[in-house]
Image (cartoon, rainbow, N blue to C red; front, side, top):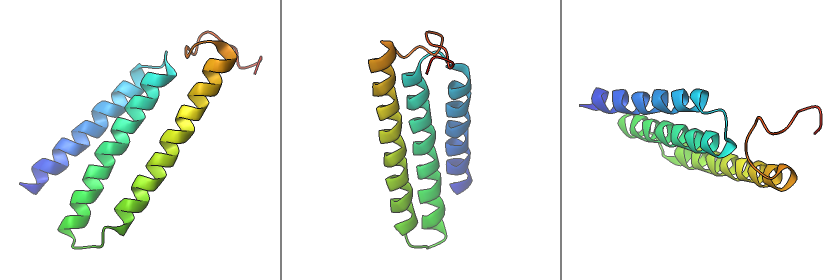
Length: 97
């Protein structure tokens, strides 16, 4: 029964990574797929820590770092939209930045 949960969350992570690789046009879709991957990793970590009877403090640290990652991604998105007008990666050149 527990291996089924492992397989489901690993499948969720793989689907998130495939979406991350295939959707490179918009920064917002890439950020959403990254958050999906982080959520699947958190669920996998939580189940693993529950099975091993460990303290769940590490899962709280993981959530803290994932929130920081999300805030950093949103700040990059906002600064990119303010400077370039949209979140397309093809609309700007790296040499101009």
